[in-house]
Amino acid sequence: MSMISPVSVAGRALLALGIALFLGGLVGSLIGVRYSVTLSGSETLPEGGALSISVYTLTSSGRVRVEVWNATTAYYIAGIRGDPRSLMKGLEAFNISTGNEDFRTDFRLGVVYGVAEVRASRGILAALPGLSRVLRFNIHQLEPVEPGHYVLEKKLGVNEALIFFAVGRNVTYSFSYSVAEKNALAPDTISLAGALTSLAGLAVLRLGVRSGSSSRRRGGSGP
Amino acid sequence: MKWPRWVVLAYLDFSDTLRPGIFDALVVTMSLVGVVLSYLEYFGSSPALAMSILSPTLLATALYLALRSSAGLAHMAEDRVIDVYLSYPLGRSIVAGVLLVSRVLVPASLIILLPALAAGVVYSPLVGSEALHYLEMIGAFIVQAVFYGLMFSVIALFARRGSAASIISLLTYFVYNILGVILSNLAESPESLMYKLSRSMSFYLVVYQRLTGVSIASPPGTLELCFVPCLSLALAAGFIAYFRGWYEP
Image (tube, rainbow over all chains, first blue to last red; front, top):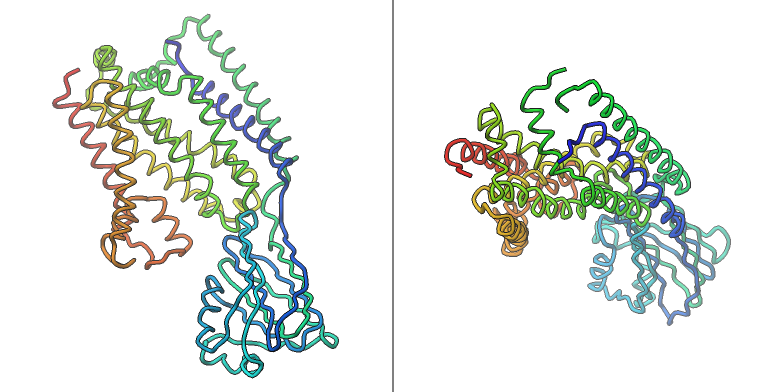
């Protein structure tokens, strides 16, 4: 049984790390790195209906931008902790229900987002800001940037949600979410670092073999 | 330079536990999984990164310790190699300590550390700013892996046969983890003793919840934090005491 020296263990560890980084960087280049997501479309809503756009961060924090056109009024609720869909369920007590939900979970970005149709009487929707005290959330009314055109930009922390309501008949919307910080290095950089680490590992292994053979020539004992 | 005898014995044992081949393949695979997972998911905090990368690595480490380290120890008894170890002019406690270091501590640390290092390189801007939290999480996973390794080593001492040791070790690992799930499912509330016991069975989960505050229950207390380390110390003490006093190869 041949003895394993610390130098050879360090060399093998460096080589293993280098190979993993090199191959991982190549796989990273193939799958790509994603930092933002967008969603857009238009919805025809029933009389007194509204469109809700929700976003809920799971593991990331970032910036949300919601833009709507052809809306008569727009509201938003920010600073919600946890899944906003549970808050929407709570609104059913006020005859505000949701349907045609299209929610998507993006695990790569760590965010849940989607649109839903809000069904309620026009009176209830107009009174939405008044529900703030009951719901213990501030429901803010947005000012239009031009008639029918509303824009909201907000920062979201980890595990935080935002719900945007746009009242109207034919609402066109655009939603984007981009992460706050690009925390990962580029895959090409990782591949290069992997190649260099592998070379360093090979050099250390070679050094271990040399020192081992010279130690044997000197007739040294022990590891 | 003359090396202490226990170091020579440790080197001799490393030649079995860190034998090239399976060990290197496992480390490369788990590090590669770590890098790919880092690109597949976005992480906003270093404990979340460690949790995601090291959870699959912990399973691989436990399997390695059960099939290679623990079964290897039993094989040594079966093939009478342990007699050679015991013929060294060293106390039995020291031989037992060396076995624990070379069969549990070093392999477990290396298998956990390298994927963590690979993911840390990918997420270096994040890990650099939260280095301490990342290191705490790595330490927590190593403690959990060492705990499994100690459990398997005790089993190997009693099983004495390599195949029996690996099967019983694997069974114990799965029973331990399933027991955690059963306890959390039986718990009436997140504040109940059963839930806390199930949570404390996973040291890395306790550390993660203390660092991030992400938990359905109140943050874990000191007793929950001490559960796995205390069990590990008890297992190590038990291993050394049995090896010293009663073990006959």
